[in-house]
Length: 301
Length: 299
Figure 1: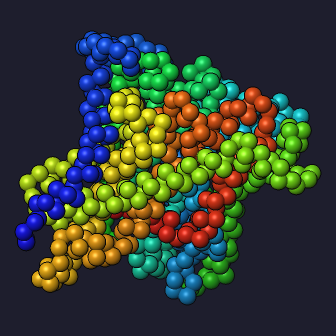
Figure 2 (figure 1 turned 60 degrees about the horizontal axis):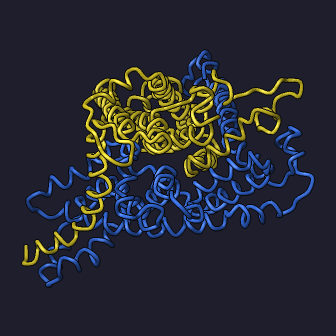
Figure 3 (figure 1 turned 90 degrees about the vertical axis):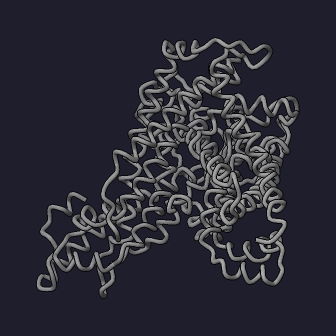
């Protein structure tokens, strides 16, 4: 290398590293530090050891939120991946083989474009839309579609169904993205494999389970991790869409909302940081577990 | 799917007619499923557009997909001026333009140096950036708020842009570092022999060569930053912040107040106004957008 290498390297790194260190690294480190304090957000910072963690162990809302996050964590990836895999398969291989070519059903491009669109919308805007779709009277889209004789469903205002509504919205938005993602993966599977199998008399069901799914396994794994991370978020939905932000009666509270409300509405910055630490370890555990459990011999396409 | 499974397996050329019927039945079912999902996807959006032309009486009548009795752009006018959608929209455009440009400039600079130069601490800085991918953003909300407060950046675009850039760096650096590593070294060496400086090589040789990667990640960042809700809600607080709200924040705000004032059609018009530009942009750049957003996951 020529002279002037180090001034160049430092010149290129100084701004990004400074920004990152100030707003990201420092913030994360302080989360760990402040989780051991009773800081309200103003004034003196008192260290109280692990009291915050003891407190959250006895906090009903915390356990409710964990339960709701787990509900999303289990159902969101499973349902989204299954729907997306089936659609991606139909769009890519569903049309059978004509003239020696395996192809998708007619109009597959149009379907793909429509399916993908919700991914472009901000979750906040989706939340406002679905807040009205699930409207608890005739002005809501779904209640409007129901026969006039039915009593309006409460949807989000019903403790039993609030979380299901959130799950549905998350699936609605996510499916198209994973259809496109899986389609890209399927596109890289050689058509020879499908043709060889079809010659051997394999049905499309067999093709799906014996060829598509195993060859896509690493993509499915990635999808699982992404969707799991989305399941730990859901903040915009719960904050905007639900009754009383996380209600009714805590029926849709999730960890991200708890962190936000403790930090900014309840002046419990220390407690919010403790929740943040718990969230961090949960996310990490989830990612490690997923990669371990879903590990398989990878098949080369 | 199961219906089809029970039918006899498609055999080879000998049983052509039955095989053909099988395929038709399967394709038919496939289309029904696909059309159903397309309706589920588009339905709520179409409903929003229709409702934006209806008055409150019509909205509460049920019949969500009935055509409005009259078409007037008054609700859109209200949404644009009284509900300030125009201003929120412009705010979002400015913030995203500046922050995406900043993210791309600083992200590619860091990624390039980390990918192609050997120096002590290189790996440390690289992993510091990449580790940011493992941490959920809202875990650090409270400290982030106080860091900005102490710097006097709360409620300012400067603060928001800096935060956007900082939180977009991990993925940008991770993605572009891999990309810069994959580029050939020969051209760069030739340029060195010709006496090009490091900076010049970066801007005139490496950046053009990395174009496809840069386009993908730019789209990824534009969409991601345009759709941010959490960070604006945390940063854009304090006196006078309301006029600086971004679109996501503004819409959420209108939706709360629409409930109080029963101005549903204004809310629907506001929603339509925020969705329409996305549809237009998507119609034009559909392929690039799909590629850009899935780029991270395919890697």
